[in-house]
Length: 85
Image (cartoon, rainbow, N blue to C red):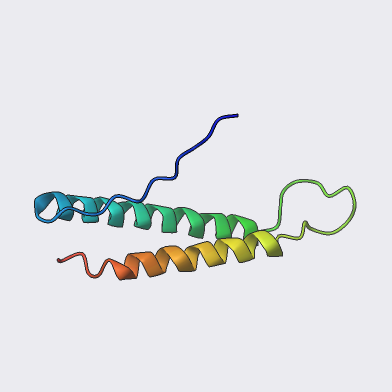
């Protein structure tokens, strides 16, 4: 059975490398936020798939998880401060 070691998250280095890392992290968070928002839009629209057993699929659980993830991503982005650092 394979064993996996848990590694700690890398810390940002001071100076230019830290600034580049922070900018990259900001871009990744913004991209993730956009993707989650888009998925929420998709899940909020009625499905085009035919419904064999009646009403629309219950997406409340999925939507709730996406909303929680969106809040976490937005909080992480806010924690980075302004992009003018």
